[in-house]
Amino acid sequence: FFFKQKTAYEIPKRDWSSDVCSSDLHRRALIDRALSRLLLLSIGFGHYAIEHNRGHHRRAATREDPATARKEECFWTFLPRYLVGILRDSIRLSREQKIVINEALALIALSTMLFISLFYFLGVKVGTFCILQSTVAILLVAAIDYVEHWGLVREEINGKPERIGPQHTWDCANYCSDLMLFNLPRHASHHLEPSLNCDALYRSSDSPQMPFGYAGMALLAMIPPLFKYVMSPRLPGPS
Image (cartoon, rainbow, N blue to C red; front, top):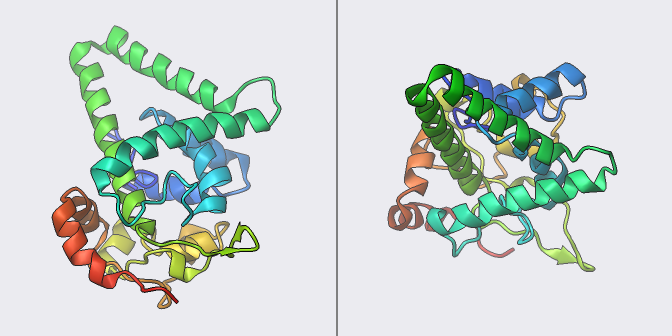
């Protein structure tokens, strides 16, 4: 996650924190869930945790999921739909909890207060730097979300999407990315068994495979013609 939640938490927080955060979002221990939200909150993306857990893991590889890129979408057309969808769905999912405080709005308010405090107490330069690093972090999270399910679709059976399987997630067999990102590239197992600790994630030979590690894939996603040229031949055909 320097690839925030892949990526998002550095002020200068280290890149690895987002990978652990991604796994911790699914942990049952209160401290793990609180820390993952705190890391995301520090870059203004705390509401991502809500949509990721309660939305994305239910709707991945469907057109209803804002974090699943469609085959016809380039990264730059995916990005606004993704950001608006994450925000909208996190607020809606928080409302469904039927608690007094809307968690998504509360996290957004806390992030806003954090950035205002940085400008007020540490000055314009520090505040601007933190805004810029948060923007880059969120951009990288979006890029990784883009490549993890790009072009993969679950078929509908009796009006409902089929059970998610390894064929609905791009996997990445890259030792360097595994080491740097706490096995985040083993994304199929993260979906099949989301409660697994990051060190228990495993590779899936049944998933379509990314040609590069996550750093290379994030950069590739930002160059749409090259991305389509490299990835289209690797996209599984209809079963």
